[in-house]
Image 1 (spheres, rainbow, N blue to C red):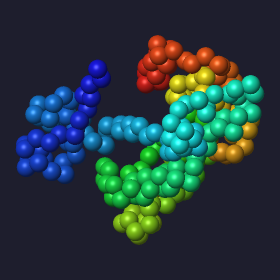
Image 2: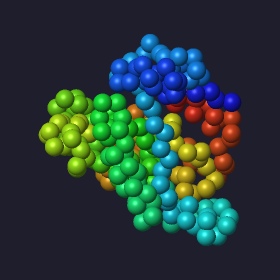
Image 3: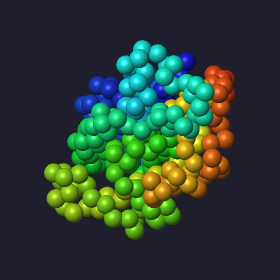
Length: 231
């Protein structure tokens, strides 16, 4: 069972005596007091699932995963191979973008991101693009990248530069692969041409070397997830 050791403190001490001082996080249960870690020195990691894809819609309508099997044809020939987002999925992504634009975080009136790590599946790249907008060019330092704060925010009125995040594509954070055609991916050559400025430099194989008719085991998927978290 996973334990979240980094929690927003809700103690009465903080709410009465430390408002605005930057000591926002505590290690362990909220009642243990405040932390020595300043909020601005704490990395915040958000895990975001991809929005609705056509494979999600197909399985919901059919009530079974059988529609995701390749049958007698190659997996890549299936219409749900490396499935894209539906219109509903695109709207879900845009709704999340709008929510983040009004969600205070740190010293800003909205939630901004420095780095977006995404798998090379088409639906995850689409989700990232609709939620976070165009990434900054690979290799460009944040201080040289120009970006704008969300409309209507004090930061936008002040003309404060908000550098767009870097988008790094990692094979390790893919969904469990194998058996179902939606979990295979196109070649990186093809995907990269559709998503310019995504950083594919850590992808080793152009073609999908991991997809097969066998479903990835629970053990391997868990090992892969742990390695990714350790990265």
